[in-house]
Amino acid sequence: MTAYQELMAFQRETEALGQIAGRLGWDQETMMPAGATPQRAEEHGAMANILHARRIDPRVGDWLAKAEATDDVSQANLREIRRDFERTSKVPAKLAAELAKTTSLAHRVWAQARADEDVASFLPILQKVVDLRKEEAAAVAGDADPYDALLDDYEPGATGASLAATFDALRPRLVTLRVAILEKPAPASLSGVFEEMGQLEISKKLALAFGYSLENGRIDKAVHPFSSGSGLDVRITTRTNATDPFNCFYSTVHEVGHATYEQGIDQQYLLTPLGRGASMGVHESQSRIYENQLGRSRAFTGWLYGQMRDTFGDFGIKDEDAFYATVNRVHDGFIRTEADEVQYNLHVLLRFDLERALMADDLAVNDLEAAWNDRFQADFGYAVDKPSNGVLQDVHWSEGLFGYFPTYTLGNVYAGCLHDALRAAVPELDTQLSKGDTSKATGWLRENLQQYGGLRTPVETIKHATGQEPSEGPLLDYLEAKFGAIYGL
Ligand code: ZN
Image (cartoon, rainbow, N blue to C red; front, side, top):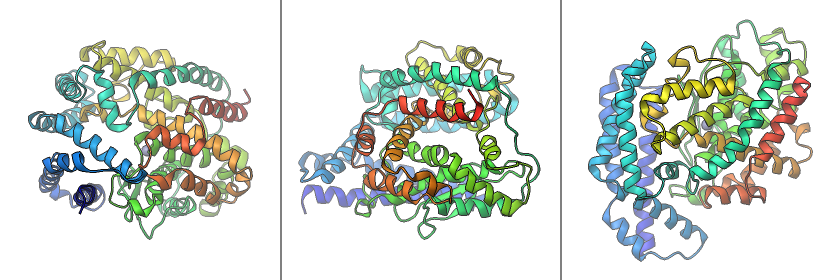
Protein backbone atom coordinates (compact mmCIF):
# COMPACT_ATOMS: atom_id res chain seq x y z
CA MET A 1 0.00 0.00 0.00
CA THR A 2 1.16 3.55 -0.67
CA ALA A 3 1.36 6.06 2.19
CA TYR A 4 -1.77 7.71 0.79
CA GLN A 5 -3.70 4.43 0.83
CA GLU A 6 -2.59 3.65 4.38
CA LEU A 7 -3.57 7.14 5.49
CA MET A 8 -6.99 6.85 3.85
CA ALA A 9 -7.66 3.42 5.42
CA PHE A 10 -6.85 4.85 8.84
CA GLN A 11 -8.91 7.96 8.15
CA ARG A 12 -11.88 5.86 7.06
CA GLU A 13 -12.02 4.21 10.47
CA THR A 14 -11.74 7.62 12.14
CA GLU A 15 -14.63 8.89 10.02
CA ALA A 16 -16.70 5.81 10.93
CA LEU A 17 -16.03 6.34 14.63
CA GLY A 18 -16.99 10.00 14.22
CA GLN A 19 -20.32 8.92 12.73
CA ILE A 20 -20.89 6.60 15.70
CA ALA A 21 -20.15 9.43 18.14
CA GLY A 22 -22.68 11.59 16.26
CA ARG A 23 -25.31 8.86 16.45
CA LEU A 24 -24.85 8.67 20.23
CA GLY A 25 -25.71 12.38 20.29
CA TRP A 26 -28.78 11.80 18.10
CA ASP A 27 -29.93 9.01 20.42
CA GLN A 28 -29.48 11.22 23.46
CA GLU A 29 -31.85 13.85 22.03
CA THR A 30 -34.51 11.44 20.74
CA MET A 31 -34.63 7.97 22.31
CA MET A 32 -32.38 7.73 25.37
CA PRO A 33 -34.08 7.02 28.71
CA ALA A 34 -33.63 10.00 31.03
CA GLY A 35 -31.86 7.94 33.70
CA ALA A 36 -29.01 7.12 31.32
CA THR A 37 -27.57 10.65 31.36
CA PRO A 38 -24.47 10.05 33.57
CA GLN A 39 -23.51 6.89 31.70
CA ARG A 40 -23.99 8.60 28.34
CA ALA A 41 -21.64 11.38 29.45
CA GLU A 42 -18.93 8.76 30.01
CA GLU A 43 -19.70 7.09 26.70
CA HIS A 44 -19.33 10.45 24.94
CA GLY A 45 -16.08 11.10 26.80
CA ALA A 46 -14.65 7.73 25.81
CA MET A 47 -15.47 8.30 22.13
CA ALA A 48 -14.05 11.83 22.26
CA ASN A 49 -10.76 10.50 23.69
CA ILE A 50 -10.46 7.81 21.03
CA LEU A 51 -11.18 10.30 18.26
CA HIS A 52 -8.73 12.86 19.63
CA ALA A 53 -5.95 10.26 19.89
CA ARG A 54 -6.54 9.21 16.28
CA ARG A 55 -6.54 12.80 15.03
CA ILE A 56 -3.08 13.47 16.50
CA ASP A 57 -1.67 9.95 15.92
CA PRO A 58 2.00 10.42 14.86
CA ARG A 59 1.48 7.92 12.03
CA VAL A 60 -0.87 10.46 10.42
CA GLY A 61 2.02 12.93 10.37
CA ASP A 62 4.33 10.31 8.80
CA TRP A 63 1.81 9.36 6.13
CA LEU A 64 1.11 13.03 5.35
CA ALA A 65 4.85 13.61 4.87
CA LYS A 66 5.10 10.75 2.37
CA ALA A 67 1.70 10.79 0.67
CA GLU A 68 1.41 12.18 -2.84
CA ALA A 69 -1.70 13.48 -4.52
CA THR A 70 -2.48 11.98 -7.90
CA ASP A 71 -5.70 13.84 -8.70
CA ASP A 72 -8.01 16.55 -7.37
CA VAL A 73 -9.76 14.13 -4.99
CA SER A 74 -6.58 12.90 -3.30
CA GLN A 75 -5.31 16.48 -3.19
CA ALA A 76 -8.47 17.61 -1.40
CA ASN A 77 -8.35 14.66 1.02
CA LEU A 78 -4.75 15.50 1.92
CA ARG A 79 -5.63 19.18 2.32
CA GLU A 80 -8.42 18.37 4.80
CA ILE A 81 -6.51 15.73 6.78
CA ARG A 82 -3.44 18.00 6.99
CA ARG A 83 -5.50 20.98 8.14
CA ASP A 84 -7.11 18.96 10.93
CA PHE A 85 -3.89 17.20 11.96
CA GLU A 86 -1.82 20.39 12.16
CA ARG A 87 -4.50 22.27 14.01
CA THR A 88 -5.25 19.54 16.55
CA SER A 89 -1.56 18.76 17.13
CA LYS A 90 -0.79 22.39 17.99
CA VAL A 91 -3.18 22.43 20.95
CA PRO A 92 -1.51 21.01 24.09
CA ALA A 93 -3.40 18.04 25.57
CA LYS A 94 -3.72 19.81 28.91
CA LEU A 95 -5.35 22.84 27.29
CA ALA A 96 -7.75 20.66 25.27
CA ALA A 97 -8.80 18.82 28.44
CA GLU A 98 -9.21 22.09 30.37
CA LEU A 99 -11.38 23.50 27.58
CA ALA A 100 -13.61 20.42 27.53
CA LYS A 101 -14.04 20.49 31.31
CA THR A 102 -14.63 24.25 31.53
CA THR A 103 -17.14 24.47 28.67
CA SER A 104 -19.11 21.55 30.09
CA LEU A 105 -19.32 23.35 33.43
CA ALA A 106 -19.98 26.72 31.79
CA HIS A 107 -22.92 25.24 29.91
CA ARG A 108 -24.59 24.26 33.20
CA VAL A 109 -23.82 27.62 34.81
CA TRP A 110 -25.24 29.43 31.78
CA ALA A 111 -28.49 27.40 31.88
CA GLN A 112 -28.97 28.28 35.55
CA ALA A 113 -28.03 31.94 35.03
CA ARG A 114 -30.52 32.19 32.19
CA ALA A 115 -33.27 30.64 34.33
CA ASP A 116 -32.42 33.06 37.17
CA GLU A 117 -31.97 36.12 34.89
CA ASP A 118 -28.61 36.53 36.60
CA VAL A 119 -25.81 37.63 34.25
CA ALA A 120 -23.30 38.21 37.06
CA SER A 121 -23.31 34.52 38.03
CA PHE A 122 -22.26 33.56 34.51
CA LEU A 123 -19.48 36.10 33.92
CA PRO A 124 -16.61 34.47 35.90
CA ILE A 125 -16.88 31.15 34.04
CA LEU A 126 -17.41 32.97 30.73
CA GLN A 127 -14.20 34.87 31.39
CA LYS A 128 -12.43 31.54 31.83
CA VAL A 129 -13.88 30.17 28.59
CA VAL A 130 -12.79 33.32 26.73
CA ASP A 131 -9.27 33.10 28.18
CA LEU A 132 -8.92 29.42 27.29
CA ARG A 133 -10.16 29.94 23.76
CA LYS A 134 -7.68 32.81 23.35
CA GLU A 135 -4.93 30.51 24.56
CA GLU A 136 -6.03 27.88 22.09
CA ALA A 137 -6.15 30.43 19.27
CA ALA A 138 -2.63 31.58 20.14
CA ALA A 139 -1.40 27.97 20.10
CA VAL A 140 -2.90 27.44 16.64
CA ALA A 141 -2.16 30.79 15.03
CA GLY A 142 0.84 32.21 16.88
CA ASP A 143 0.77 35.98 16.54
CA ALA A 144 -2.02 36.02 13.97
CA ASP A 145 -5.50 37.30 14.82
CA PRO A 146 -6.94 34.90 17.43
CA TYR A 147 -10.49 35.34 16.14
CA ASP A 148 -9.41 34.20 12.66
CA ALA A 149 -7.91 31.05 14.17
CA LEU A 150 -11.23 30.21 15.83
CA LEU A 151 -13.26 31.09 12.75
CA ASP A 152 -11.11 28.79 10.63
CA ASP A 153 -12.50 25.82 12.54
CA TYR A 154 -15.99 26.45 11.17
CA GLU A 155 -15.29 28.31 7.95
CA PRO A 156 -11.87 27.48 6.50
CA GLY A 157 -10.33 30.46 4.74
CA ALA A 158 -12.66 33.11 6.18
CA THR A 159 -11.23 35.96 8.25
CA GLY A 160 -12.86 38.37 10.67
CA ALA A 161 -11.86 41.28 8.45
CA SER A 162 -13.33 39.77 5.26
CA LEU A 163 -16.60 38.92 7.04
CA ALA A 164 -16.75 42.36 8.65
CA ALA A 165 -16.53 43.97 5.20
CA THR A 166 -19.50 41.91 3.98
CA PHE A 167 -21.51 42.32 7.17
CA ASP A 168 -20.89 46.07 7.46
CA ALA A 169 -22.39 46.38 3.99
CA LEU A 170 -25.44 44.36 5.03
CA ARG A 171 -26.28 46.14 8.23
CA PRO A 172 -27.41 49.63 7.14
CA ARG A 173 -29.69 48.33 4.37
CA LEU A 174 -31.22 45.75 6.72
CA VAL A 175 -31.86 48.39 9.39
CA THR A 176 -33.48 50.69 6.82
CA LEU A 177 -35.62 47.88 5.41
CA ARG A 178 -36.72 46.84 8.88
CA VAL A 179 -37.83 50.37 9.81
CA ALA A 180 -39.73 50.82 6.54
CA ILE A 181 -41.57 47.51 7.01
CA LEU A 182 -42.56 48.13 10.61
CA GLU A 183 -44.12 51.48 9.69
CA LYS A 184 -46.64 49.57 7.57
CA PRO A 185 -49.68 47.66 8.88
CA ALA A 186 -48.74 44.10 9.90
CA PRO A 187 -50.29 41.14 8.05
CA ALA A 188 -52.54 38.81 10.02
CA SER A 189 -50.84 36.24 12.24
CA LEU A 190 -52.07 32.68 12.67
CA SER A 191 -54.57 32.01 15.41
CA GLY A 192 -56.18 28.85 16.76
CA VAL A 193 -54.88 25.39 17.51
CA PHE A 194 -53.35 23.02 14.94
CA GLU A 195 -53.38 19.39 16.01
CA GLU A 196 -50.05 17.63 16.20
CA MET A 197 -50.80 14.69 13.90
CA GLY A 198 -51.68 17.08 11.11
CA GLN A 199 -48.51 19.11 11.65
CA LEU A 200 -46.34 16.00 11.52
CA GLU A 201 -48.09 14.73 8.38
CA ILE A 202 -47.47 18.00 6.52
CA SER A 203 -43.94 18.12 7.92
CA LYS A 204 -43.22 14.70 6.38
CA LYS A 205 -44.75 15.77 3.06
CA LEU A 206 -42.50 18.83 3.10
CA ALA A 207 -39.41 16.71 3.78
CA LEU A 208 -40.25 14.43 0.85
CA ALA A 209 -41.11 17.41 -1.37
CA PHE A 210 -37.61 18.77 -0.80
CA GLY A 211 -36.01 15.49 -1.78
CA TYR A 212 -35.20 14.01 1.64
CA SER A 213 -34.73 10.23 1.43
CA LEU A 214 -36.35 8.23 4.22
CA GLU A 215 -34.52 5.19 2.86
CA ASN A 216 -31.36 6.81 4.24
CA GLY A 217 -32.88 8.94 6.96
CA ARG A 218 -35.64 9.30 9.52
CA ILE A 219 -37.61 12.05 11.24
CA ASP A 220 -38.07 12.11 15.00
CA LYS A 221 -39.22 14.67 17.51
CA ALA A 222 -36.72 16.53 19.71
CA VAL A 223 -36.66 19.70 21.80
CA HIS A 224 -34.31 21.42 19.32
CA PRO A 225 -34.50 20.56 15.63
CA PHE A 226 -31.23 19.29 14.18
CA SER A 227 -29.72 17.17 11.43
CA SER A 228 -27.21 14.44 12.24
CA GLY A 229 -24.97 12.15 10.24
CA SER A 230 -23.48 11.85 6.78
CA GLY A 231 -23.62 9.52 3.80
CA LEU A 232 -26.10 6.67 4.01
CA ASP A 233 -27.57 7.59 7.41
CA VAL A 234 -28.66 11.22 7.79
CA ARG A 235 -31.38 11.83 10.35
CA ILE A 236 -33.39 14.92 11.22
CA THR A 237 -35.60 15.99 14.10
CA THR A 238 -38.45 18.44 14.28
CA ARG A 239 -40.80 19.75 16.94
CA THR A 240 -44.42 20.85 17.17
CA ASN A 241 -46.17 23.77 18.82
CA ALA A 242 -49.97 23.65 18.90
CA THR A 243 -50.43 27.34 18.02
CA ASP A 244 -47.44 27.74 15.69
CA PRO A 245 -47.35 25.08 12.96
CA PHE A 246 -44.87 27.20 10.94
CA ASN A 247 -42.28 26.43 13.60
CA CYS A 248 -42.65 22.73 12.81
CA PHE A 249 -42.84 23.14 9.02
CA TYR A 250 -39.92 25.51 8.58
CA SER A 251 -37.73 23.73 11.14
CA THR A 252 -38.27 20.59 9.10
CA VAL A 253 -37.49 22.28 5.79
CA HIS A 254 -34.38 23.89 7.31
CA GLU A 255 -33.04 20.59 8.61
CA VAL A 256 -33.95 18.86 5.36
CA GLY A 257 -31.70 21.42 3.65
CA HIS A 258 -28.80 20.28 5.82
CA ALA A 259 -29.71 16.61 5.50
CA THR A 260 -30.27 16.44 1.74
CA TYR A 261 -26.92 18.18 1.28
CA GLU A 262 -25.28 15.30 3.14
CA GLN A 263 -27.42 12.73 1.31
CA GLY A 264 -26.57 14.34 -2.02
CA ILE A 265 -22.79 14.05 -1.72
CA ASP A 266 -21.19 11.70 -4.25
CA GLN A 267 -20.93 8.26 -2.64
CA GLN A 268 -17.34 7.85 -3.78
CA TYR A 269 -16.55 10.25 -0.90
CA LEU A 270 -18.35 8.11 1.72
CA LEU A 271 -16.45 8.04 5.05
CA THR A 272 -13.71 10.34 3.76
CA PRO A 273 -13.09 13.99 4.72
CA LEU A 274 -14.89 14.99 1.48
CA GLY A 275 -18.04 13.07 2.42
CA ARG A 276 -19.34 15.95 4.52
CA GLY A 277 -20.47 19.47 3.72
CA ALA A 278 -17.75 21.97 2.74
CA SER A 279 -18.18 24.21 5.82
CA MET A 280 -20.75 25.51 8.27
CA GLY A 281 -21.47 28.49 6.01
CA VAL A 282 -22.01 26.35 2.91
CA HIS A 283 -24.17 24.00 4.99
CA GLU A 284 -26.28 26.89 6.18
CA SER A 285 -26.66 28.11 2.59
CA GLN A 286 -28.49 24.89 1.80
CA SER A 287 -30.77 24.97 4.85
CA ARG A 288 -31.55 28.65 4.25
CA ILE A 289 -32.26 28.49 0.54
CA TYR A 290 -34.65 25.57 1.17
CA GLU A 291 -36.30 27.30 4.10
CA ASN A 292 -36.49 30.88 2.82
CA GLN A 293 -35.88 31.51 -0.88
CA LEU A 294 -37.80 28.34 -1.83
CA GLY A 295 -39.95 27.38 1.18
CA ARG A 296 -41.20 30.89 1.93
CA SER A 297 -41.63 31.90 -1.72
CA ARG A 298 -45.04 33.03 -3.01
CA ALA A 299 -45.22 30.00 -5.31
CA PHE A 300 -44.41 27.35 -2.71
CA THR A 301 -46.52 28.88 0.09
CA GLY A 302 -49.47 28.72 -2.33
CA TRP A 303 -49.09 24.95 -2.32
CA LEU A 304 -48.56 24.86 1.45
CA TYR A 305 -51.76 26.87 1.96
CA GLY A 306 -53.71 24.15 0.14
CA GLN A 307 -52.08 21.45 2.28
CA MET A 308 -52.99 23.29 5.47
CA ARG A 309 -56.59 23.84 4.32
CA ASP A 310 -56.92 20.13 3.49
CA THR A 311 -55.55 19.12 6.90
CA PHE A 312 -56.90 21.76 9.25
CA GLY A 313 -59.93 23.14 7.38
CA ASP A 314 -60.53 26.91 7.33
CA PHE A 315 -57.95 28.45 9.67
CA GLY A 316 -58.93 32.05 9.15
CA ILE A 317 -56.52 33.17 6.40
CA LYS A 318 -58.60 34.08 3.40
CA ASP A 319 -56.40 33.26 0.39
CA GLU A 320 -52.92 32.40 -0.88
CA ASP A 321 -51.74 36.03 -1.01
CA ALA A 322 -52.80 36.65 2.58
CA PHE A 323 -51.15 33.38 3.60
CA TYR A 324 -47.88 34.39 1.90
CA ALA A 325 -47.88 37.65 3.90
CA THR A 326 -48.63 35.74 7.12
CA VAL A 327 -45.76 33.30 6.53
CA ASN A 328 -43.40 36.23 5.93
CA ARG A 329 -44.73 38.47 8.68
CA VAL A 330 -42.02 40.77 10.11
CA HIS A 331 -42.46 41.39 13.82
CA ASP A 332 -40.55 42.79 16.78
CA GLY A 333 -38.79 40.29 19.01
CA PHE A 334 -35.69 39.72 21.09
CA ILE A 335 -34.87 36.14 20.12
CA ARG A 336 -32.56 35.31 17.21
CA THR A 337 -34.00 31.85 16.54
CA GLU A 338 -37.52 33.29 16.24
CA ALA A 339 -36.52 36.14 13.93
CA ASP A 340 -37.82 36.61 10.38
CA GLU A 341 -35.68 36.79 7.25
CA VAL A 342 -35.27 40.58 7.46
CA GLN A 343 -34.13 40.80 11.07
CA TYR A 344 -32.33 37.48 11.54
CA ASN A 345 -29.00 38.73 10.25
CA LEU A 346 -29.09 41.82 12.48
CA HIS A 347 -29.13 39.45 15.46
CA VAL A 348 -26.11 37.60 14.08
CA LEU A 349 -24.12 40.75 13.20
CA LEU A 350 -24.55 41.97 16.78
CA ARG A 351 -23.02 38.72 18.11
CA PHE A 352 -20.24 38.74 15.52
CA ASP A 353 -19.09 42.26 16.39
CA LEU A 354 -19.22 41.60 20.14
CA GLU A 355 -17.37 38.28 20.07
CA ARG A 356 -14.73 39.69 17.76
CA ALA A 357 -14.21 42.59 20.17
CA LEU A 358 -13.97 40.13 23.09
CA MET A 359 -11.28 38.13 21.35
CA ALA A 360 -9.35 41.29 20.37
CA ASP A 361 -9.46 42.60 23.98
CA ASP A 362 -11.49 45.58 22.78
CA LEU A 363 -14.37 44.53 25.01
CA ALA A 364 -14.19 43.18 28.57
CA VAL A 365 -16.40 40.26 29.58
CA ASN A 366 -17.80 42.45 32.37
CA ASP A 367 -18.97 45.03 29.81
CA LEU A 368 -20.57 42.46 27.51
CA GLU A 369 -24.15 42.87 28.70
CA ALA A 370 -24.07 46.67 28.41
CA ALA A 371 -22.52 46.44 24.94
CA TRP A 372 -25.19 43.94 23.88
CA ASN A 373 -28.02 46.13 25.15
CA ASP A 374 -26.64 49.29 23.51
CA ARG A 375 -26.25 47.58 20.17
CA PHE A 376 -29.70 46.00 20.37
CA GLN A 377 -31.26 49.39 21.06
CA ALA A 378 -29.35 50.92 18.13
CA ASP A 379 -30.41 48.28 15.59
CA PHE A 380 -33.90 47.37 16.80
CA GLY A 381 -35.06 50.62 18.37
CA TYR A 382 -36.21 49.24 21.73
CA ALA A 383 -34.54 48.07 24.92
CA VAL A 384 -33.75 44.51 26.03
CA ASP A 385 -36.10 43.78 28.93
CA LYS A 386 -34.28 40.86 30.62
CA PRO A 387 -31.04 38.89 30.14
CA SER A 388 -32.78 35.75 28.82
CA ASN A 389 -34.02 38.00 25.99
CA GLY A 390 -30.54 39.47 25.59
CA VAL A 391 -27.01 38.37 26.30
CA LEU A 392 -28.02 35.06 27.93
CA GLN A 393 -30.31 33.82 25.16
CA ASP A 394 -27.88 31.65 23.15
CA VAL A 395 -25.96 28.57 24.25
CA HIS A 396 -22.94 29.19 21.95
CA TRP A 397 -20.61 31.30 24.08
CA SER A 398 -21.01 29.05 27.12
CA GLU A 399 -19.77 26.19 24.95
CA GLY A 400 -16.83 28.25 23.73
CA LEU A 401 -18.18 28.42 20.17
CA PHE A 402 -16.60 31.76 19.25
CA GLY A 403 -16.49 32.12 15.47
CA TYR A 404 -19.62 30.05 14.92
CA PHE A 405 -22.29 32.78 14.75
CA PRO A 406 -21.05 34.47 11.56
CA THR A 407 -21.49 31.23 9.60
CA TYR A 408 -25.26 31.70 9.93
CA THR A 409 -25.22 35.01 8.09
CA LEU A 410 -22.55 33.82 5.69
CA GLY A 411 -24.95 30.98 4.86
CA ASN A 412 -27.66 33.53 4.08
CA VAL A 413 -25.26 35.51 1.90
CA TYR A 414 -24.32 32.33 0.01
CA ALA A 415 -28.00 31.37 -0.29
CA GLY A 416 -28.66 34.77 -1.91
CA CYS A 417 -25.94 34.11 -4.50
CA LEU A 418 -27.14 30.56 -5.16
CA HIS A 419 -30.75 31.71 -5.51
CA ASP A 420 -29.77 34.23 -8.20
CA ALA A 421 -27.91 31.56 -10.14
CA LEU A 422 -30.73 29.04 -9.68
CA ARG A 423 -33.37 31.51 -10.96
CA ALA A 424 -31.24 32.24 -14.01
CA ALA A 425 -30.75 28.52 -14.72
CA VAL A 426 -34.39 27.47 -14.11
CA PRO A 427 -36.72 30.24 -15.35
CA GLU A 428 -39.85 28.09 -14.89
CA LEU A 429 -39.08 27.45 -11.23
CA ASP A 430 -42.24 29.06 -9.79
CA THR A 431 -44.55 26.93 -11.93
CA GLN A 432 -43.06 23.86 -10.27
CA LEU A 433 -42.89 25.30 -6.76
CA SER A 434 -46.58 26.25 -6.91
CA LYS A 435 -47.33 22.50 -7.27
CA GLY A 436 -45.14 21.61 -4.29
CA ASP A 437 -42.52 20.25 -6.66
CA THR A 438 -38.97 21.37 -5.82
CA SER A 439 -37.19 18.81 -8.00
CA LYS A 440 -35.75 21.35 -10.49
CA ALA A 441 -34.41 23.50 -7.65
CA THR A 442 -33.04 20.69 -5.53
CA GLY A 443 -31.70 18.96 -8.67
CA TRP A 444 -29.80 22.12 -9.62
CA LEU A 445 -28.35 22.43 -6.12
CA ARG A 446 -27.35 18.78 -6.08
CA GLU A 447 -25.71 18.95 -9.49
CA ASN A 448 -23.89 22.23 -8.95
CA LEU A 449 -23.01 22.11 -5.27
CA GLN A 450 -24.14 19.25 -3.06
CA GLN A 451 -22.56 16.31 -4.89
CA TYR A 452 -19.06 17.74 -4.42
CA GLY A 453 -19.11 17.68 -0.60
CA GLY A 454 -15.78 18.96 0.69
CA LEU A 455 -13.92 18.67 -2.60
CA ARG A 456 -13.44 22.43 -2.86
CA THR A 457 -12.86 25.11 -0.24
CA PRO A 458 -16.04 26.96 0.85
CA VAL A 459 -15.61 30.02 -1.36
CA GLU A 460 -14.57 27.85 -4.33
CA THR A 461 -17.66 25.68 -3.73
CA ILE A 462 -19.94 28.72 -4.08
CA LYS A 463 -17.98 30.12 -7.02
CA HIS A 464 -18.17 26.80 -8.82
CA ALA A 465 -21.95 26.69 -8.38
CA THR A 466 -22.70 30.33 -9.21
CA GLY A 467 -19.83 31.29 -11.52
CA GLN A 468 -19.26 34.37 -9.36
CA GLU A 469 -17.38 35.65 -6.36
CA PRO A 470 -19.81 35.55 -3.40
CA SER A 471 -21.11 38.93 -2.19
CA GLU A 472 -23.92 40.35 -0.06
CA GLY A 473 -25.61 42.13 -3.01
CA PRO A 474 -27.93 39.31 -4.14
CA LEU A 475 -29.27 38.68 -0.61
CA LEU A 476 -30.02 42.37 -0.05
CA ASP A 477 -31.66 42.77 -3.47
CA TYR A 478 -33.77 39.67 -2.85
CA LEU A 479 -34.92 40.84 0.60
CA GLU A 480 -35.72 44.36 -0.57
CA ALA A 481 -37.68 43.09 -3.59
CA LYS A 482 -39.58 40.41 -1.68
CA PHE A 483 -40.53 42.44 1.38
CA GLY A 484 -41.00 45.61 -0.69
CA ALA A 485 -43.72 43.76 -2.62
CA ILE A 486 -45.37 42.20 0.45
CA TYR A 487 -45.45 45.48 2.40
CA GLY A 488 -45.98 47.89 -0.52
CA LEU A 489 -42.78 49.86 0.12
ZN1 ZN B 1 -28.89 25.34 10.17
